[in-house]
Length: 401
Image 1 (cartoon, rainbow, N blue to C red):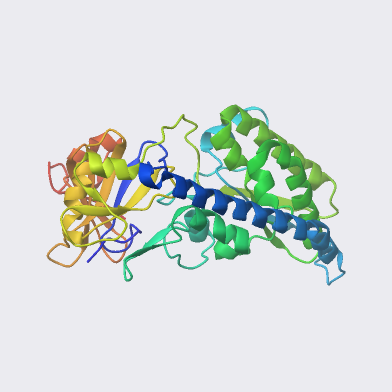
Image 2 (image 1 turned 45 degrees about the vertical axis):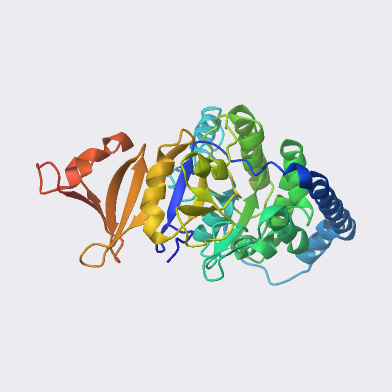
């Protein structure tokens, strides 16, 4: 039995990284020229696809506006339109600082807990209930076939180029507004700050048009996430202040009330990162990094894709705990998580390893989590004593409903 990619499924082992991870590896000298030629040809082919796409789809924005302008039955002119604005990568820190500058005054606030792993595709899928994914990313391990699907640069770029981001994941099809034209992804990444104005122009045009016939709309903004990664908190705060100004100007210019609810998929630590390679980490701790599981020795298959805050490792279930313990001792790993053997009642048990030490908990089918030896979890910064059972005693368990 091998591990799978999700923490809610059987036999997971995920090493959480302190920083992003590199995808580059050394090319053997005798193959260097041929490998470089293949990469150059691939990139040239991808560039051609991009140019063709941009040329063929350049008129998408006006065409969408034309469709939105077709008269249809309208909702009552005084009925409010609820707009749910999904802001990718909106951190609590940046939002609070924007509010200190007067933005989003009058909004009620509530904290959102990011699901694990906190990556956009997975979290939007969870939030919008868009159905199951093959894995956390476009690249994932198919345990039944013992192969990695969507691997490498073609897996990362081919799907969005061929199908668009909405064609890759159904969650993005849930948004009434996704971007200004089919080429919006390229503009958002090339210059997210400069692209914000045209993106907001297109978004408010769409909201105004569709608000005539729909009382609930869901819109998406990518620019904040990219600025958060490339720039810093100050630039994100400035962008949020501008978004708030544009929302208020839009509301003031409409004949009916538009009420905005802002939500996000994940935040941003706004810290400098170090690129690390999970394959090197495995080698450093004496675990073979493989492209397919052979069932021989201590081996693991890493998914080298998102490279932001975690990496999924697939291994034989019998080896998962040992590999988790070893990787947790590496300088670039904060925590490692793996499924343990079920308890005597068949309830799933999981381990979290920190610097080689294991901390265990159980999760039953109702979702109740029972933490074993709760007094040992002080490093997490959570006081589990009020939930201690038996009360007032050391050891025992703590129950989280």
